[in-house]
Length: 379
Ligand code: GTQ
Ligand code: FE2
Image (cartoon, rainbow, N blue to C red; front, side):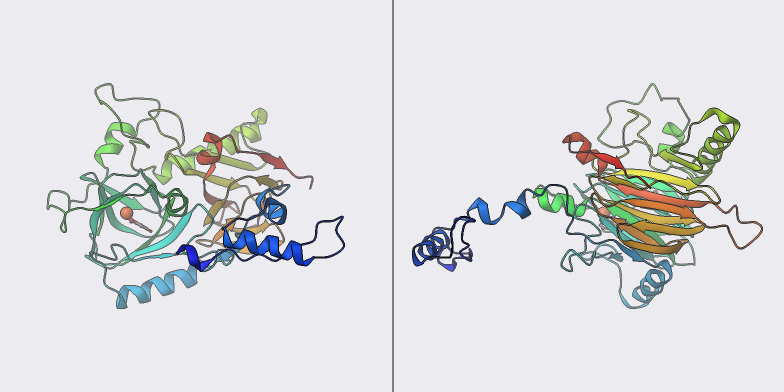
């Protein structure tokens, strides 16, 4: 934009004790425009609101629709160098068509056809994969092949080389979460291409990655491992552990010893086994279980979240929006809007009736900047 474009456009406004916009006042505003100046008094309500007013809108995406479109993309759009990934991002309707689920978070469905590879690259953006259904893809992070199965959470901190390969004869879908919108605002991103083909030594399909064999034993830190890079050194958090942690938490609560967030609401946070902190510098991830017939109290928090229903069905409320949700559905909770969830008794005998919600958020950023606030609303 050149200096002569005068991108500042102002409407003269009379001050409260001034009857009207006088010619002098209008001249003052044209002067502001020419010099690229904007007075605080016309902007303060937007710039310094009494409480957060997110530009993002509560919205829900149905998994069936996402998978159907991703499968069509699988038939029509090749994956390879340049586009890098067959990933299709959730675009929040309040964010002007940008591929941003919230002002800070990217959420996408990624799809790989049988035998396909997504080429190696690295970037400063922090990322994770979460698998709601299917199996058969290995993500190769720094040469370590990590299997992906239903319920697994796979963090992958920025600047690690990574590629994905589908070793089976079936397509696979999963979701990616990244801090792309946050890093876009920081203007501090870097990106590099890696090898066009990963080595045969990495196109292997181990049941457990090196990282899991070193770091996947509760409370046991490998003594011989040297200096660590940012983010969790554990590259996969297996569903069997998450599931057992939630079931045990609810059982301890039922025995009268507490341990849950609130009655009938168990939750675990994925943490870095080396530090006990969040798995990624900018992203927090959790799994919540709302037991059969239980309901969570409405909570407001600064910062935004994306949820995916992992299992069960129920009703979720975000601000003025209420949706029925079931397996795979995604929805967003913008900053400072109250969120609550209720499980619905399952329709089959085998269904436990609980609602399992995978959640990721930008909380580590807000905590680091001391901008985190939480308020429990009265029901
Ligand atoms: O799988 O490496 O959804 O780099 C967006 C950017 C996935 C990935 C996304 C990425 C990736
Ligand atoms: Fe990537």
